[in-house]
Length: 260
Image (cartoon, one colour):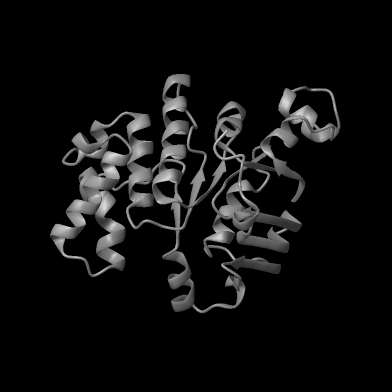
């Protein structure tokens, strides 16, 4: 696991959901949901498909606002910010999309450079150096001039990571980073996330159905079920949980309180 020995001084929240309720039409996605994201740690969020895990990431990034409750980043409530204030908060956060979301018409280097060109006043020389450093961090330094169509699925994921970390954010949000990848590439992606957290000396949240990957990298794990976090703790405590819902989910069993 990534960093089990977090000191008491670092065990503070960089982001927090407090009694968050959010619905899309008649569908309640989150209901009185509470979650702390510990600074300097990797937090994994697990749960069934459609449970609202990715919604949590979008709430933290300010892309969605709750119907009720509060979302704090660095102690500031993003629910009451204007767009300019939200953009300032977003400078500290980066979201790595599930399918990388690279622009097909741009080279990998230009895709990674986008956040720097849009949100900084760096010179082209400075941008090029930052992009090369980000690509080197994910093992893609030779892909600078390639187009996304020339990359494999795992390479696309890592190019997305490079774009996510090129601004050196304090908090990186990874949405299903290992979806559709074979076990070898999944291990590579898991190792890359661990290395990036160390490089940035920052915090990460990972949404995934890949339980071995989650438990290989996460310091803390939260389980989302029926709109609320029903279990939260260190990775070891969740793996050893006697909560019947957690047990059934981790075992992948058809028998238990989770309806099939």
